[in-house]
Amino acid sequence: MQSKEKKEKEAHKFWNTQPVPQNESDVQEDGVIEHKEVSDIKQEPYKLPSDFEWYLVDINNEKDRTDVYTLLSQNYVEDSDAVFRFDYSPEFLQWALQPPGWKQDWHLGVRVASNKKIVAFISGIPANLSVHESKLHLVEINFLCVHKKLRSKRLAPVLIKEITRRVNLTGIFQAVYTAGVNLPTPISICRYFHRPLNPKKLCEVGFSQLPHNTTMASHIKKYKLDVSFLNLQPMQEGDVSQVTALLNEFLSQFEFHQVFSEEEVRHMMLPIKDVVFSYVAKDENDNVTDFTAFYSLPSSIARNPKHTHIHAAYLFYYAPKGLGKDQTRSRHLMNDTLILAKQANFDVVNCLGLSHNQQFLDELKFGKGDGYLHYYLYNYRCKTIQPEQMGLVML
Ligand code: MYA
Image (cartoon, rainbow, N blue to C red):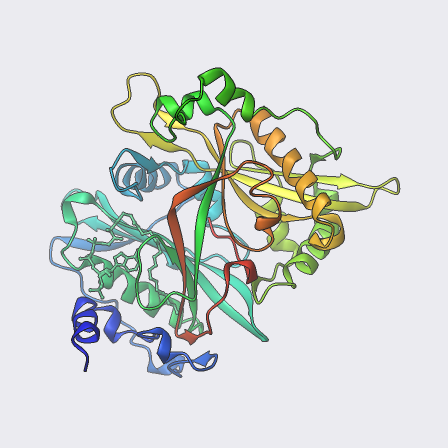
């Protein structure tokens, strides 16, 4: 074995043991890695270190919701300087964790046995994906978090094994997940892009920098949005069926995409105050022609005298009239999405460089971010997906 490969193998003591491709050359064609039956799966939970216990979070219970919120708001994903940290709201978590088919068994916490404090969490929700030509019913894993004081004690592998066991017991053997970190082995790597709406504040908090030889006044002017093109209106219950059809048709152009039922669109796309924002354009016959949505994901800011949060809107799903073949229409839809996000008081719109997003990123003045999001599948080999073929957006 090459010494670099050997080092990498040793470097992933846990991921080495899991049904994931260990490197890109491991993926010649798509398919299941390990075939298992429910009867192969052990009935007893994995053991936690003594002093800790498993706890199924009741996300509809206010105390549990606040406890998970507190864990994540203090310990979840941060930038490398530990200045900005994701601050998903309690209402967001309640929405995100309960799409059709959700299970409390997959809202898995770890508590300190003595004082019942939640110190770690991982979650799964069901989803349907289309991957190249195959359909996969799987879980999306998200919100893995271990309290800062318990890091590097190999608790994360126990959480991952236990959620895997619980999911496997329901007959599901694949999962999709995303992470900032590079693990064995990404199926796709997508860059983050940021579109300032409140450029002055973004400079004040150190999220962006005023370019050399530029005044703040001209910087602000650069990002002004004035003309809107489509008469976008908040999506309503009566739009669910048409949005489902339009969105699924748009997504079916990509090699890797989520497939939505009407119930899922109803849950995931209808507006919820301060959580998810979605809009439709309609023609003269009241038919939906375009759809766009973003969700609210603020980041807290450490040590800033003036601001506590960046209010970020994350571009979620959209589907333009003409399914993106008319690039001008896509740009108009996204221009209007930016205007709506600005009206809703967001400081920035973030998105990934996936699906058709390249059609509007430059023209609408999105800047390249430093971060990349890695997409992974568990127990399924999948040939590399180029970002412009990626049609899955996670929360
Ligand atoms: S991504 C968001 C992850 N959360 C954060 O980044 C929040 C801040 N960080 C933390 O809370 C901790 O640092 C975490 C690790 C919890 C991330 N995904 O316990 P350890 C591996 C997968 O000593 P800690 C999201 O939520 C690492 O390579 N593995 O480490 C999706 C090492 O393994 P190996 C990760 O720092 C999650 C091992 O953990 C990640 O105390 C998808 C070290 O463990 C990561 N983001 O805790 C999970 N980070 O030695 C997989 C580190 O082999 C789901 N590690 O390199 C798989 C599918 C399961 C279901 C299957 C059903 C069929």
